[in-house]
Image (tube, rainbow, N blue to C red; front, side, top):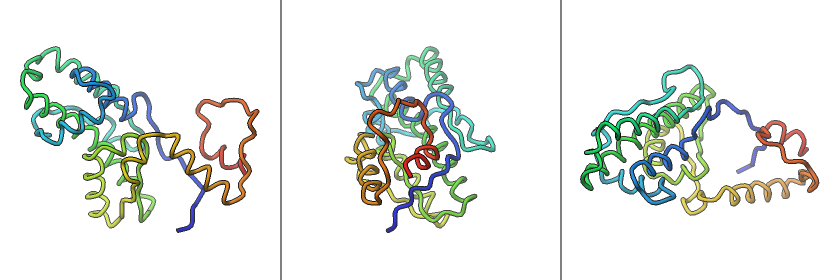
Length: 199
């Protein structure tokens, strides 16, 4: 399959990213760090409808994400309802409910964007792409919308350096000029700028 180096940013994270939300909520619950994988494991044994948490920006006419409010909602919920951590099944239900909120936002916004732009394939990357709930829900939603989810094996998604290395190999194979070693660090360097300067 030919590799495209053309990118368009449709949306971004306004505050806490999904992975940060998973880890921060896991810390509130008392799970070991990194909390995301443990929360995912427990969520698979819980009831995702046990508690209702907000789905931030889910109905907004954009493709942005914001999860700091969800994290805060969980913190206030636990302050008012410490019994939600009383038993193992309570913890599993809490994990499942939080995961359901995060996954629903990610899936709905992703499929909405993919539908608008008439794409055939969807992919996810980064540590959150290891989340089994996200993989399952996005795969089902993509299939329902007539699309296909293509995602790397989980063991290749945990380290961003691995993904950057694979992209670097693709650039090398296409004889695309590398960024000079003495270049200054540019926080928030967008993909469009990276692509145009690399060429």
